[in-house]
Amino acid sequence: MAALFATLDPLVLRRLTRSWALLRHPAQAPPEGAWRNWLLMGGRGSGKTRAGAEWVHELASRGEKSGLRIALVAETLGDAREVMIDGLSGILRIARFRRPELEISRRRLVWPNGAVAQIFSSEDPESLRGPQFHYAWCDEIAKWKHAEETFDMLQFALRLGEDPRQVITTTPRPVPILRRLLADPGTRLARLSTLGNAANLAPGFIDALQSRYGGTWLGRQELDGELIEDREDALWRRERLEELTVRLVEPLSRIVVAVDPPAGSGAGSCCGIVVAGLDGRGRAVVLADCSVESATPAAWAGAVVKAFRRFEADRVVAEINQGGEMVSALLKSVEASLPLKLVRATRGKFLRAEPVAALYEQGRVLHAGRFQALEDQMCDFGPDGLSSGRSPDRLDALVWALTALLLEGVGEPRVRGL
Image 1 (cartoon, rainbow, N blue to C red):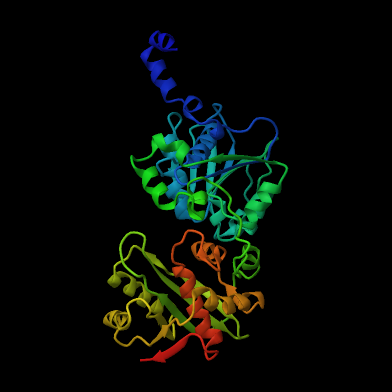
Image 2 (cartoon, one colour):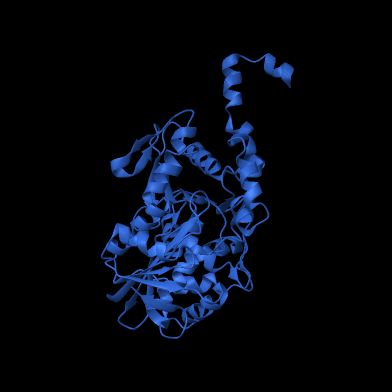
């Protein structure tokens, strides 16, 4: 093989060494035969985005004249541009020939031969009414805000040509839309792991993450690309959370911001901050997960006050097991008039979470959107905590918020006001 390369023209050799057909892993090659959905499930940095971008660019750049229409759908419009188009593995970065032009005002890419790729967000499923396409690329579908509705609208639009197809690139999460795709006979599944793409990642990246997350639930999902189902002994189920997710929220009579301060600061720490309110029918509505990671005390205190002002909340509920009276002093230093109640846990996390989980089963709690990081903790929380062994910081904040709204006076938590 080396002797053969030595006889090639340098320009030809350069093109060969940049050829995606030679560089890609077998799992990054489109499946053979008949299929509708090419589902690429992979860990962080496993090469799934590159595979999607290469597939789209190859389709769009064929032929001298093309009326090809492609849909690019991401969680948000910002993600579509920052990952699918301008990212390190995005279409504009990997296009080695017939490079498309980005018409950002029209939210589309246009190739020299006339092929067009339009950008869409899962936040706006209705935008997929009207347009029609030959192909589609769905990125991180497991994170989509309105996954089922957006995907359904896309299927109605995917109606041009003789063989409409779509590639779906995502980190696996046990959400209904992924289960639906896996059960579809028209789906061809390919799995990618972060380890398999180590040669294209920063030195030490794999070792650092393996040492911290190797063998854990989070590592198996985010590095190995495994679809980890909900724990059998978890207090929540994703199907139930999906049922309780709403798009329209009734006027709220009372809103609280709950905070679970971190034990420390810096890498790996997280301050749980959850906002929830009461609607006219006495149901609690989770409005936002404003948790911040790797933040200094001043930074997370600022995030709490920002959430309080943004949602025009009535009070802040703060756990003081970590930090004691310093938590109050820190929050008051940012906003002196902050209405604050301090709570102290006297029972274990699982015991405190059980009555809150019962509220969900009774339909007394709704989610005003999908909060993936929070829901991941909820559906992985069992009697022994999270599978990763980490603190359920976001979940703790959720428990305090819903306890304050619906369970206060039952006996736990014990609350004292300032």
